Structures are given as C-alpha cells and as structure tokens.
Amino acid sequence: MNFLEQKICDEGLVLSSSVLKVDSFLNHQIDPEFMKLIGIEIANRYKSDRITKILTIESSGIAPAVFAGLELGVPVVFARKKKSLTLTEGLLTSKVYSFTKQEQNEISIAEKFMHPGEKVLIIDDFLAHGEAALGLADLVIKANAHISGFGIVIEKSFQEGRKKLEEKGYRVESLARVKEMNTNGITFIQSEVMSS
Ligand code: 5GP
Image 1 (cartoon, protein in one colour):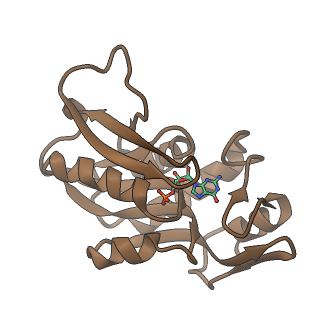
Image 2 (cartoon, protein in one colour):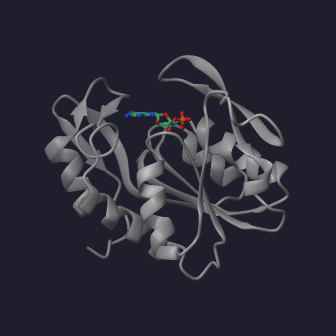
C-alpha cells in the first residue's frame, strides 16, 4: 500500500459505495506536509514533459496543484465555479455537471492566464465520472494550449472518468486508484510505486 492509500484507509470515510469522504487531509482540513508529498509525486510523473502551467478547479484541487507547481516551478491557475465580481472580461468558460451535487456549473478562467501553445498539466482531487476533468480540458483547448496530461489524487476506478479521458488519448496519472469501497473497507488497483 502506498502512503496515500494508507492515509485513505486510516482517515477516509466511505459514505456510500460511490462517495468517499477525506476531509481530514484533502477536502476540508489540509495536511500541508502530506499534501507536499502528493504535489511532489504528481510533479515527478511529469517532470520530463516541460510543463508550463498547471490548471485545477476550486477548491480542493488547489492544494495539490500548488505543491506540484512549486516542484515544477510553474504557475497554477484555478478555474472558478461561480461568477466573480472581478472576473468579468476575457473569459474562457465550460459547462461541468456534478454528479455529487447534481447541478451544472459554468466554470471559467481568465484568458490572459492560459496562452496558446502552453503545456498544461490538469490536476484535481478526485476523478469520478470525468466531468470536471473534461471541463478543464475544454478550457485548455479553447485557449489553443496543449494538454500534457492529468494528475489526480484519488481516482474512483469503478466510475468511468479514466475511460473517458483515455478514449480521448489523454495521459492519466492517479496516485490512488480505488477499485471498490464499502463500509467494510477499500480496495485499490495496484499503482506505481511512489517515491515516499
Ligand atoms: P467528476 O467530475 O469526475 O464526476 O467528479 C470529480 C469532482 O467531484 C471532483 O472535483 C470532486 O470535487 C468531486 N467528487 C467526486 N467524487 C467524489 C468523492 O467520492 N468524494 C469527494 N470528496 N469528492 C468527490
């Protein structure tokens, strides 16, 4: 078991067979030392890809994205889920349906932070049905930038997110891949050995 899988088993709460709560280190409280290791691990997997920018979505993608950005030495842009008073002009937008919240959000970033030709690493906390990931990919495409791949903290492999992304030819790196979960426990798909 890698250090993330161990943390999920120790602190995660399986709310149903499809929803995992990890609010002690990722979704509410953030464990900075632990998140730093997560960021380093994602960065290591893309260190030879000449990434120029990281794109994530508020709010839970920001922590792993910032630590990965620190390691790769690139800026991090986070897409907003709600319209902002100050974010009004030159916007790139995309629609994202959330299965957990059962609502559609329009996500957006300022055009000026995503330039044509950039090599973009997209990071998020969870990959489930792939809606958020595809919405972020759409923003990169609209900016005429290049999607180098995805860095996911927790992938729920029993949902179809990875399949949708791979069908489009995208590289997906997930640090923990949940095969199955229920109140008795969580099983993982064997993943790459992590550096810590
Ligand atoms: P997707 O768009 O792939 O269906 O879902 C990904 C997004 O939904 C993530 O950004 C994450 O915030 C949220 N999400 C999906 N499944 C879970 C889950 O089991 N637990 C938590 N905490 N968030 C989830």
